[in-house]
Image 1 (tube, rainbow, N blue to C red):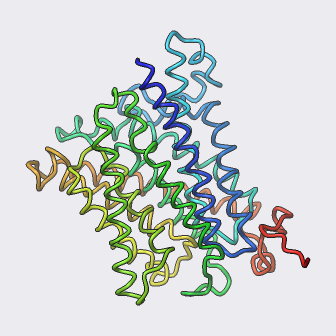
Image 2 (tube, rainbow, N blue to C red; image 1 turned 120 degrees about the vertical axis):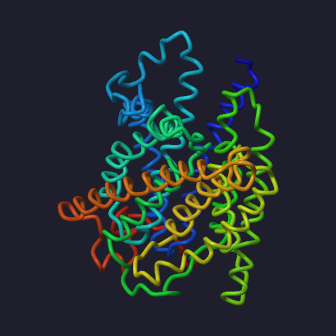
Image 3 (cartoon, rainbow, N blue to C red; image 1 turned 180 degrees about the horizontal axis):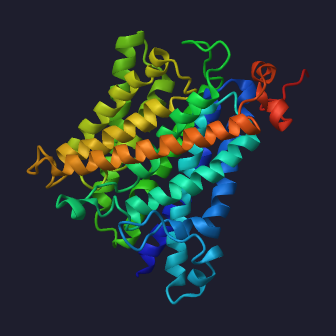
Amino acid sequence: MDTGSIAWGLTATALVLFMTPGVAFFYGGLVKAKSVVSMMMMSFGALGLITVLWILYGFNMSAVDGPTQFAGNPFSDFGLGSLATGETGNLDLLGATYGATFAIITVALISGAVADRAKFGSWMIFAGIWATLVYFPVAAWVWGGGWIMSLGETLGLPGVIDYAGGTAVHINAGAAALALALVLGKRIGFQKGITKPHNVPLVLLGASILWFGWFGFNAGAEWLNGLANVGLIVVNTLGATAAAILGWLIVEKIKDGKATSVGAASGAVAGLVAITPACANLEPGWALLLGVVAGAVCAMAIEMKFKFGFDDSLDVVGIHLVGGLIGTLYLGFFAIGTGLFVGGDLGQLTVQAIAAFAVLIYSFVVAFLLGLAIEKTIGFRVKNEDEVAGIDTSVHGEEGYALANV
């Protein structure tokens, strides 16, 4: 492989890793000031734990030998010793590291659903077990030769399209977030407008880092393909995200009378989520339409938690689950060559729907049972008095802002 492609693989890996601190900033700005350390630590805790687990056995689980297998053998190359000493070890280890960054951010995304009320230790236990039981196998299903990757061949239909993680990352994380929100219950005094972002610039900074890193997220794997489709991927990543900002702000203006900066940041993330599975398989015009739809629908979807009574603190469900579903199913209509409205038939939509809802159901069930087990044993939620006071000092012994009179 040429050195330019390898250099892009290394750069993309760094970009995607940078996205997890971006999540920390984005989520941290959205919570109250007394919970910002706790919120950001959940992302950094995931970064530490999931990296170690991926190197020990997660990468081994992320590929299977046939479509009927659940995941790879976690002990087949424990600690990646054989991979490191193989003839192609240099490239293989770079690929493994790139894959680790996806695992890390998928877990970190879930934390937004339990902001202001989760114990750090319980979160870390959940994160490690959920990654082992859900993310690592689902990565194998989607990208590692598993049943989703083989679904089209099995059914005699087009193959499932999930270029960068609509199912494996966003639907997966969003479903788990919904499960945890139900297990931990509502924050004290939960109602519309009870809490506002304590630091709007931090939210915008986080969203900007995410958008920056997302070019590695979507176009990163092209280092393995000689950068053959990188132009289409990057223009779609830019265009859909920009269009989603507009879609979100239009809905926000109509609904609330004002277009907000937090809405613009949230719209950008919604667009990034939606274009993730579709970035390499849409013409740019259809990518723009996807962005507008995702921004508008997700802006309305975040109201679901008030209608249905679940407290998804930072709208992981409304943005990542809904946005991931939109992007994944949209391919059934507009994927180049196979979408229903661009020369194909219902086959693409069929396999997209099967993959999306299979991952949704599996992730939700495992996350719900795991979260419930933790809550009933060691406890997942902090004490009410700690939640009211702010959990930074009680959980971490720190304050996000040490203000002193001078």
